[in-house]
Length: 165
Image 1: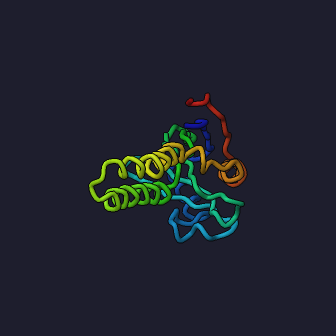
Image 2: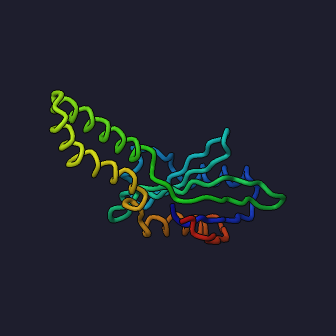
Image 3: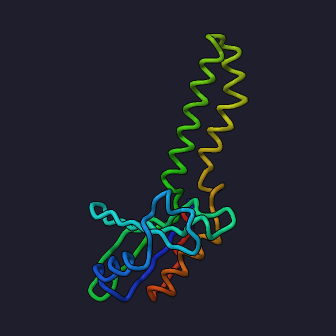
């Protein structure tokens, strides 16, 4: 895990959602190719906001998003959350891991020694890769762009809370 952020915005929840709708694109894999674009989605059921910056704007970025909970107060909105790996990146890594496991079992043809070798050579490194995916895809440039969007475009006050590690 990484740092947790608290963003205080001087507006109502409805105004925030309206401004996000006006100033961002949907957070989908198709929109990741845009340059200088903020991407956002809001989940009404969980009251969770997802914000990312398009990968076309950064060197190797766009692999994570800011996932925050919306807390509506009297005169302002407080967003509290952390950066997480984008769901399609995580699903792609899971899919690749499962395919490699199936291929390993298929090519071992019941030979436990060969299956053990495949496990050590391919599966364990993939498992370590999947476990450390948040550390690998972390991008400070992308995080700064998302936080600058909240600070500059929405006049937010950003606080960095204690590390979660």
